[in-house]
Amino acid sequence: MNNTISLPPGDTSTERLLTAPGIQRVPSPKLEMFVLRGFLTDEECDALRALIDRDRRPSTIADENGDNYFRTSETCDLSASEPAIAVLEAKLHALTGIAAAHGEPVQGQHYDPGQEFKAHTDYFEPSGEGYRQYCAVAGQRTWTCMIYLNDVEAGGATRFKVVGKTIQPERGKLVCWNNRRPDGTCNPATLHHAMKVRKGEKYVITKWYRERPWG
Image (cartoon, rainbow, N blue to C red; front, top):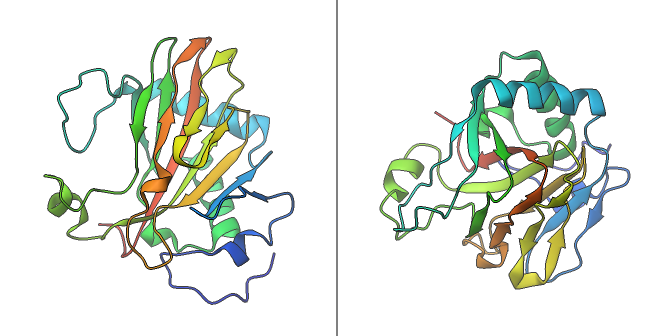
């Protein structure tokens, strides 16, 4: 991989990501989004799923919106001291070049049949009640990296409605996107919906990065 591209420590770029063998850019002028199949091995996926099963709890959202069924999955934060997380972090750094200090703790999610996360963006709304609380230290979210840890029997796709793209869950597949427009403002075209699982269950890993060092 080409490591000569100079970037701020909390950022990556289309040019950098496209140096990864097998990576595909989603063809849309509205956002920067990429898909890479086989990012994690079966063994790596299994290890991460075991960590999620150990610690998962009901998910929450940053700004309450009155919809108690907006996010019905389970969630857990995964410690960087876990060997499986260390492997994941190293692979993400090799792909993106983003400094580890700019990353939030890795989050795992689990979905049972009927569970979903309705259409949302990953950045914090500047007008939202939680903006100051969540962005005062580390700033806004820059990039999202999401990895599916299993094949889902039915349902569970991630739908990016604004750009007309639906991504099916596939074991080991990574999806990453820039939460900003080229001018640095939040990009509403990143709106996405973790659609209901119809049969089976779904496991996902998410890593968010910030403008400034985390914590």
